[in-house]
Image 1 (cartoon, helix red, strand yellow):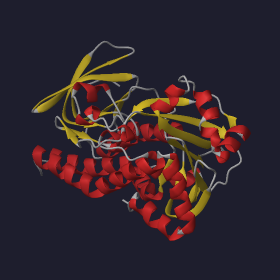
Image 2 (cartoon, helix red, strand yellow; image 1 turned 90 degrees about the horizontal axis):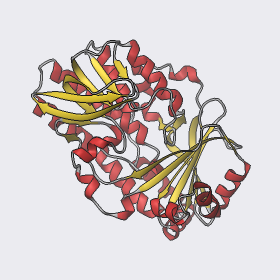
Image 3 (cartoon, one colour; image 1 turned 30 degrees about the vertical axis):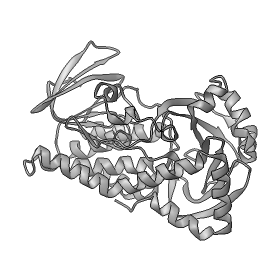
Length: 383
């Protein structure tokens, strides 16, 4: 498709939030351009467990989610570094699907609705003066510029634009919420289809759950300090730190790692972020990142796109001003997600400590009624 000079909406980032927003707005007849730095399908570091609060929304987007026969996950198996364990039913539950499959299918839906998706493309600059002027470059083309009425940032945890805009979260120094690394594998292993495992180790935790086609996602996060101590060697880190948890030692020893793995990401930050930056509406992790142990980042990303798309439609139809749109988006984001992210940041500090996570699991075993309220605080309702 030919790149035009003018669009109604530009979306920087073609993950869950960006693609679902593109699907919604292009279905309404608006011209939408999406910039994605990778090429579909591709693997992305992610726990690949999605809360069931997103199920109906996927159907609204036109995704045949029920026909995919995905594993439904209704039980949490929690372990501490010393091997202690606790099992509980999840109040809402979720399902497993790889980002490799899900993002590719959402990209197909967006294109079918008329959205233009530019893959292997990097946005270099975003300027605002009544409208947005967006400069981008790709592997095949030199720098180009398009103009749009609306611009959305859905580029995930961190981008070159965050640095250019000097976003405040990059300046904060709390080490308990800053500078993490994450590693993901797809594996073949013996694990119950309906159970998600959350295994703690020194300065980190690892999730295991089933996805499609008999595969399992194993994804862990730890401090960058842990990796440095192990000479930046992932295998050394897994042998000397993760596998001190006997449950993780069993999983790593008895599983087969699939081709193309591991995939990694660094410089993960959980500090508070702004939901609007230079008049750009921020979706998903770009607006605020819930800690992975809460297992709810993908649902929040999808929900932010629904809120944003509804307000963008009202703005483009002339029902509300740009200021009204931005203020309402910030209000709805705070109302729906602020408490959940704060809960996640608090839990992160517990599970980042060997002693505290051992105590936490022991308390759940002694007082199992405490588990359900904690899980509910990190999850929302169907949207």
